[in-house]
Length: 300
Image (cartoon, rainbow, N blue to C red; front, side, top):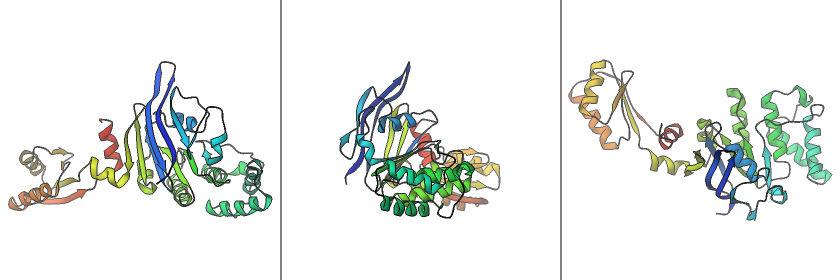
């Protein structure tokens, strides 16, 4: 599979702070890629380096096989970009703004109209007649995605696209990004791990200026974490008994948790409960999620 984006050994320092130490990753075609890290981890720095707005101290970035250069815009013809806080001409309507973007991209008038209609439908603004200055944050994010897609980019880059949105707004943006992934590769940064689990094919965790985990989400789940078993007994003393019998587990708020539990571990735990006739409110096998894996790799 061809890679749309390739980053190798990316480094960047601001004064005494080393923000990026050795960032290496690749984004294949037809992929929704989640770029995960804590606030201030260097996600925006990486993205600005990709579009040539920041000069790295070292490393290489290529888009569709062409090297990215600081201050150059040649590779940006492959990119659509949505910053974390997009700005617009408030006196324009969404249709007028997209038409302007199409002219800036040197598209033909007939193509601008067809593409504008297509994108307004995609982002749910086809029937919106108001000027942009009256838009909510979620509506502006939707328009921002539309403008980023106007020239049919090979790579759509979104910086924290769901930040500061309410649950309904987040869901709408995620659905739009998932649909956009049918047309182009999507690379979006976030610290909201449930967003990544909902729509992403691949993920990279950024911590300490480095990529500490990267790959297909399903494959990472299989490699990094086993299923946990949670047991909530009726009696706190029974939870303590389970912890005594299975010392690799622990009791939290009256619930006994056995992490990295294999199928055999779960069966032995159930057998012990049945033999001792323990009263249990809940016995649950919990599949590993990205939050657990992220906390694991950053050591917290």
